[in-house]
Each structure stands twice: as C-alpha cells, then as structure tokens.
Amino acid sequence: MVTAAEPRPSSYYSSYKVDGEAAATAVAEAAREGGEELVVPPLNFAMVDHGVFRSGFPDTANFSFLETLQLRSILCLCPEPYPEANTEFLRSHGIKLFQFGIDGRKEPFVNIPEDTIREALKVVLDVRNHPLLIHCKRGKHRTGCVVGCLRKLQRWCLSSIFDEYQRFAAAKTRVSDQRFMELFDISSLKHLSSSFSCSKSS
Image (cartoon, rainbow, N blue to C red; front, side, top):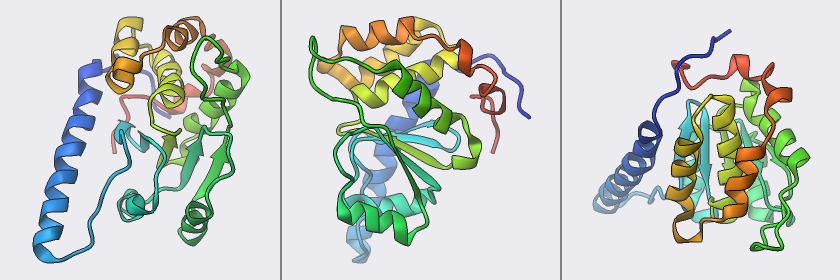
C-alpha cells in the first residue's frame, strides 16, 4: 500500500501535456516519413498520474494512439450513448467502459451532480481499473472537475487545482466548476485514496 506524500507542483503535471503534444508531433512526423499509420492523441490528451490519463472524446483517428496506452478502462462523463465504433474498439481490446453521464450545458444552467462525481472518483481511485482514460466531449469542464476533486484527495492547494483546470478550460473557464471543486467534500473517499497517490512509482 502506498502512503501519501507531499503533492507534486501543478507544473509537474502540466509538463505531461506539453511533452505529450511534442512527442505526438514527433511520432506523427516519423510515421509520415516512414509511410506508417499516424498515431494521433485525442483532443486535450494529458497524463494525470501514473496509470491515469485525460482527454476529449476519442474518435477513430485516435484508436492507434489509445492502443499504445494499453488501457484497462475508460471513464466517460458524457450522457449520450457511446458510439458504436468506440464500443467495438473497447470490446476488441478488452477495455471496460464506465459511463457517468453529466450534462455538459453551459452555466448558469449547469448542475454538477456531486454523487455522480463521487462515483466516478471511486472508479479512478481503484487501481484495478488502471491504466484508465477519463474523458468528456472536449476534456475541459467535466473531466476538469473530476481531476480537480482527485487533486483535493492528493492534498493539492486550491490555487494549484484551479491553475491546472484553467490550463485545459482556457477562455471557457467556469466559475461554477471552480466553486464545485472548492466545496466538494472528500471525507467519504479518503479511505479509498490510500492505495492511490501522486507519489506512486512505476
């Protein structure tokens, strides 16, 4: 069992996004030169922690990239039925789908269901589901809320949580999302986080 440790700064995890994009570009260029199939990550793809990734909704162009992650599970936060092509990809690769539908409408009409976020976090915290990809439509708001609440369990300060959220949401940052993360009660999940820590080594 892994014990909690001092959380790494948010810049540590933002480097995954930057480095991941650079690596993806290099892979794509090499593939073009070699006449190989392009390996393209989904929109807003980044590593959250060891064995946990985040992104926008993957499409068929991203399947080759997803294969490289050797995923065991996908956590989808969209309420719409999962596309047939994606479902077939999951089935053929033995990937389990967890779907927690959250309405993605813009504020002030959005109502973030705390119980749904809590259930989604239970999936993320269960290392038996790793490697795992968390995604919504664009990998910004719904995914950002789940990751932000995970960071609270990892004892990140609010300013670092908001900084990470804003890097993905950019100009579409929602005050309601940040308020939700600030008020989210992690007490009922603390016993689950003992086996999942930002200090885990591979």
